[in-house]
Image 1: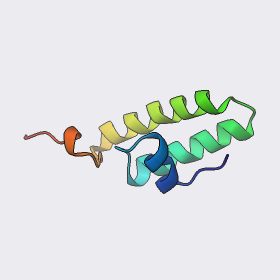
Image 2: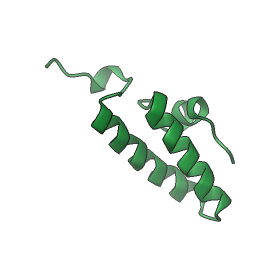
Image 3: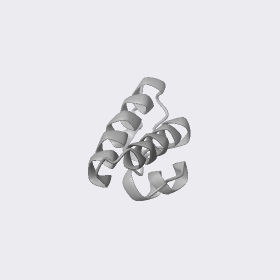
Image 4: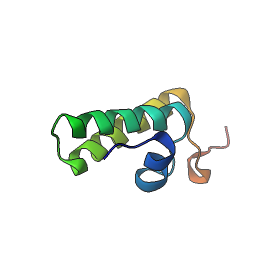
Length: 68
């Protein structure tokens, strides 16, 4: 199933937004097209998206915000 960033974030990882959600959706879509199981593709894309979001500090989720 091809995903776009908004759909992927709303269904599979609500704390992703922007670039991280876009890259996660693209990765999951590419993996499914390559024959990987959807569950594995989603889990892998979530891990990648979370890593990108942590690096760029672009989480869009109230619990992920810290009082620095």
